[in-house]
Image (cartoon, rainbow, N blue to C red):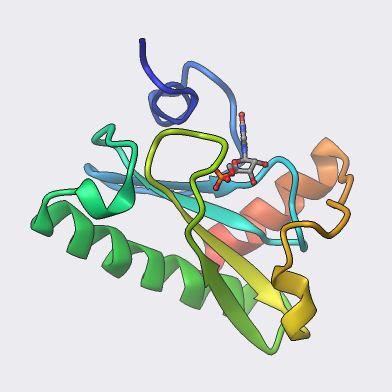
Length: 130
Ligand code: 5GP
């Protein structure tokens, strides 16, 4: 069965899309640690990021860099933090989180509750900055 992220990349489950190319897809995390918290995935479905083939792995980070630059330009933050967990969804992904302080990257923090309008506005801002 396809992973939830494969269904998102295929447009079968809605998402707040940030960017896409033939091999990669970026979209807002539905339970964000901060406004602009984004997930970047390879369309190729592999659970563990370090099991990706070299080309897909390198391309994923290159794509994430472009997205992070867009986040930094669109969302007021000191830096864009990076995390790879994969404890919940078995489809490799990189978290990009706008940071004001080190504590903003603590996954035990309470997640933000945003309206669809807020998600849309954030996604559009970042997408326009890429
Ligand atoms: P991880 O697998 O890295 O531990 O966590 C998975 C992340 O994916 C979580 O931050 C969670 O909020 C996010 N997530 C899980 N399901 C969905 C979904 O259906 N849509 C979106 N946009 N994010 C999701």
